[in-house]
Image (cartoon, rainbow, N blue to C red):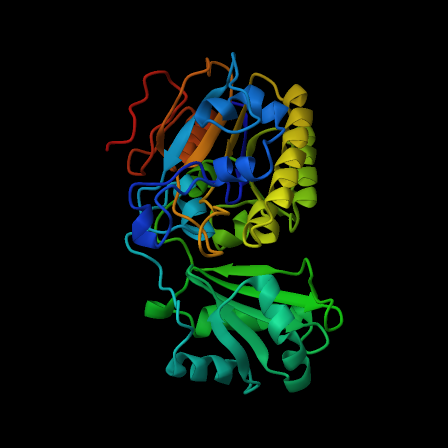
Length: 395
């Protein structure tokens, strides 16, 4: 079967609170997509609207489609509200327990082990912080002292920021790789250790595109492995490769910005003969969501909408296109962290018939496997939405 599948994750584009949202410290009415649309006076997304985005939720500016693709909402089966677990679940890996987090900063014993690996340079900050605010507030001290900027969030993550004049990007990445392998292991195995290089002068610091995520290995088998072991090419665009520690991928393509991710995905639409392309579009999360920049968020969605509009005429009857997300990041939340939400599902393929499908994140991986191999993996979670009458997620 010479079929292709394109799964594109619109990072942080949540679609309504989950029943346990309040357990994560999030508002009971969390709804990223709806609240961004309201904040900007309505979204202008003609392509996503035609595919059925306005049929998924009532979104200001997005009219329900009279002829939608398959559409609905997906819910996680495991704990968490972060990129790592969200992407894992899309490909059938449900973590059995929450990944370790450090909402009060890293404890003294862990700091000591981190400093030993870092060569005794010391750290500043060591608290939950916005990635842009942390270099603004600690960047000048970092330049003067040589201490690395260590910070975290409500997610399971350790982040190290360094100016290229203090620690060049390649050295920062190498250090974060060592921390992943030697320190953040066992009970301290956070979902990601992230290198965050930046440049510029005080008052004008800017993060570069040299970010690198070092993820913990997924705790179970994924649909990516099912595909690659059956000889199906599996391409990563953006950070999807890093989030799975490379497990299950056969090829990777740069996508540190939305522009690059969209360009690479479009190139693969034109060039790929067979296989899966798994893309993350990061800026609705990293650049706009955490800063509560709803105008920037909306503009980013508009650029994605235009790119999808360019792809659609180049997709044929043997192609599956899935647009979804990994978690929410509601601008009305009283914090700048992710929010525990459903995610939207839009799936264009021959035979979709405009059906609604509400199910589990893992339904994406199950459907991709079925589309590309005409087979399933009964031991993995998820139910293919390719066939009418696919059962909904229990509960």
